[in-house]
Amino acid sequence: MSLSSLPISRAFDYSVRRTTVDDIPALGYALAAAFYGDPVMSWIIPDDERRRERLPSLMELFAGRVQPHGENRINEAGTGAAIWCPPAATFSAEDDARLEADLVAVARDDLARTGEVVELLDANHPADEEHYYLMLLGVIPDRQGAGIGAALLRAVLDIADRDGVPAYLEATSPRNRDLYERHGFTVTRELRTSDCPPLWGMWRRPRP
Image (cartoon, rainbow, N blue to C red):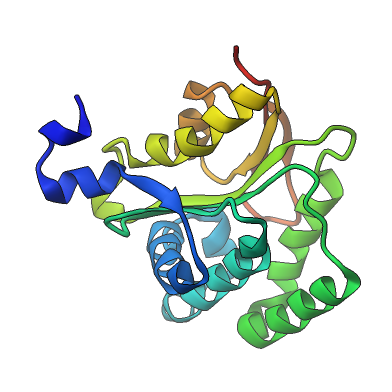
């Protein structure tokens, strides 16, 4: 089905573009809604009301960190978003210090668990080959399962395939792990810390 044959409201779901700085609040909103019930995020911020309050700011923080590298994506409807870090992206000591300070301000009494998961991901991130890194991808709950996540993936995976570059991510639930497997990712390791639900490191070789 082509975009031109869809109702306008649905066509906007599948029209994916790069974000600008002005899109960061919308990106944070979509990802916060998508991850509110996520098992790993629910472990990081176990209180429901606190999680609802803090997730938008946390997602905006991560989106803003990589926004200068130009590969974040959102659909025109604002129902789905993805934070992508391109190959060879680097962060200065000042960038890292700013992230740490912002995490303290946003996470507050959930900082210990937030830091524990961030450290787990950093410790297991592949470092021997340049790749696209999908930090976060989410679709608001009432539009999940409609193909929006696939559209967000393809927007960058098509570029990765064209350029012959691998991709990496961490799945935070069996459901999104299955989505990523359908798009060529394979599990390389299960990631665990404390009593947090498992995450799965997943790697994808470019397709011809």
